[in-house]
Amino acid sequence: MHTLLFSPTEDLLPFFAIFFTFMVPIMAIYFYFKHKSKVMDERRLMIEKGLTPPPINESIEISRSKTPLTKGLNMIAIALGLLVGYYISRHFEIRGPFSIMGAILFFLGIANVFTALFVEKENNSSSLNSDNEKQ
Image 1 (cartoon, rainbow, N blue to C red):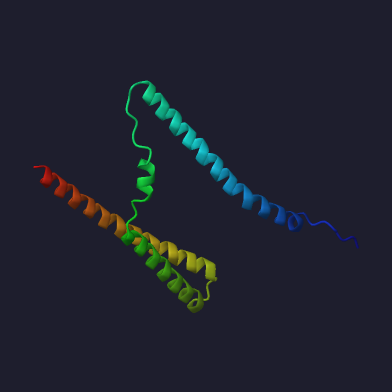
Image 2 (image 1 turned 120 degrees about the vertical axis):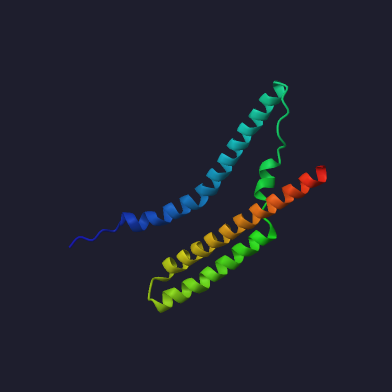
C-alpha cells in the first residue's frame, strides 16, 4: 500500500491561516488609506473651485453617535443571546454555536429596533425643542 507523505489539505491549512491572519488587517489598512486619499483629493478639488468642503471629522462623529444607552442595550442583548442560546443548545440538543449565534443575532436585532425607535423619538423631540428655541 502506498501512503501519501504530503496531504494538501492538512499541510496548507496552517499556511492559509497565517496568510489570512496577516492579510486581512493589511488589506483593511490599505483600503482605509486609499479611501482617505480619495476624500482628500475631493476636498482639494472643492477648495480649488472655491467651495467650502464639509468638516473632516463628520464621518467620525457619525460613528461616535452611539449613545451609552445603545451600547448598553447591545451588551444586554449579547448576554441574553448567550444565555438563551446555551439553554436552547442543552435543552433541545442542538449544536451550541448555531443556537448561541442565532440567539445573539435575534436579541441584537431586537435591541437595534428599540434603539432605532428611541433615537427617532429623541431626534424628533430635540428638533422640536431647537425649533421652539429659535422662535
